[in-house]
Amino acid sequence: MKKLKFIWILFALISILTWMPRLDGLLTKEYSAISGYVGLDDGWDVTVNEKTWQNVLLTALQFPAVSKGDEITMQRTLPADWGLVEGALRLYVRHSAVSMYIDDELVYEYGTDRLAAGKTLGSGYQFVNFPNTYQGKTLRIQMTVAEDKVFTKLDSMRLYEWKDAFRVLVTENRLPLFSGCFLMLFGLIVFAITVFALLFSTKYIRLFCISLFSICMGLWTLSYYNVMLIFAVPLYSISLINYLALYLAPVPLTIYIREEVANLRLRPLTIAYRVFLAVELAAVFAVMTLHTLNIVHLTGMLKYMQAVLFVGLLFFLLVLLLNLKFSRLENQLSVLGMLVVIGCVAYDLIGYNSGRYLGMDAFNIRGVSSSGIMIFICILFISFYIEMTQKMMEQKERDFLIKSAYTDELTQLHNRRYCMERLNKMRDEQTADYTIVCLDVNNLKTVNDTCGHAKGDVLIRSAASVIAQTFEQDGMVARTGGDEFVAVLRTTDEKRLSALMEQFEQNIAQKNLAENGLNLSIAYGYASASQQDNDIDKIYQTADDCMYEKKKQMKAAAQH
Image (cartoon, rainbow, N blue to C red; front, top):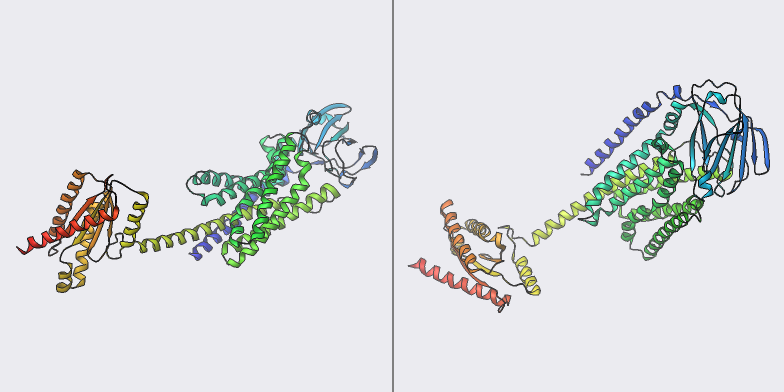
């Protein structure tokens, strides 16, 4: 079984490693042809509040982190010729209202009305139509910052062919596009399956948590790396999705890890887990409430939620490391996945915060967190699969042991233990309207003594077959001793009982005809409960007495 799991995992990895480069090649094969642009980073006069820099390079300029209400003005002369058929200016907006002028004529505006209403503006790329008539004219951009401490430098500004602008964006962010779409599709499929499975069993709650976490991180990836722009989603909506997904994602992951915390049985860790989950839920509720009331927007709570996220990742890692003492493969895989996620998230957190607060581009590789999370979710899914397989095998083993404990080995009917527990349960529940049938195989000792125990076993199995054939559809049948059987029927109707006994005798006769030399004979007696008399011990004894009376009659008849 372990070899099959290893082969399956290896096959999946080889498939990914084989097909990913080919898919990547489909997106990048025309990149050199479409990625040409006109750079507009040089020759700018920039004013931040009252401080001015002249003839500067945008990507080289750095200033103290701007806050809500700060004004930034940028101005330069556009090139006299840029050789594009239909230009598109790629402008990166960072939580600011933007007004763009060509020779003092307003040609583009974003976020002014939302800023006046106190709403969030978002952060990401905007594409502005730039016809050739703008060549040689003066470009002026005015920005009003809407949030505190949002950036310390300006972003590169480029002119692309309009038809290629979005293709370049997708190609440059192909890794986040792949991983984000994978996480979304995986999460939605698993969610659709598990949301119905949970109606029948809570054992699928962890898989449900994986699906929610995957959906959140898929949305975060597609929004954070701006690839959601290709679906014509407004920038402020993309930003809202980005923060909501990031803030909500740790909640299902925390619920997922509850079982690992419970396995450790460490009271301080259990208390810490409950406190952390409560803080996490309270933080999410608080930031959403503050944002809805326009008191503090989601972006303003980013550093606090980042801290909660990172503490959560460290807590999860601690729990998984402590669970390694169980030496299970799924725990080892989870620790490996968590290490990958912590490394990737730390990489992106350092890169993001160094750019936002220090103006430094610490790292250039994009999509690291989404790729790490995709690997982690795959590992979680594999771990869940292994865990569920092991639990199913353990449950199957438990079911087998339980069945063995309550099953007669020779006849495969219920045994005496099961019968007694069933009768005790009926006594406790004060069950009414039932009939107990006691049965005894005639001449078993004689057959054992003269023909051997093997022949006696054939007689017992034949008797069991006839008894089950007749009574099992109406109740429970058990072998309670060497040649003794009991049937507990769910009826007290005398006509039904008479029909069953008649059918029973016919089944015995047919069995004897079918098997030469069998000579099967079974004595029986029965007694029914009533509203006036529901003493199960008394009813059992009455049925047993009737059976022995019948046995005497059959023995006497055989002697004549």
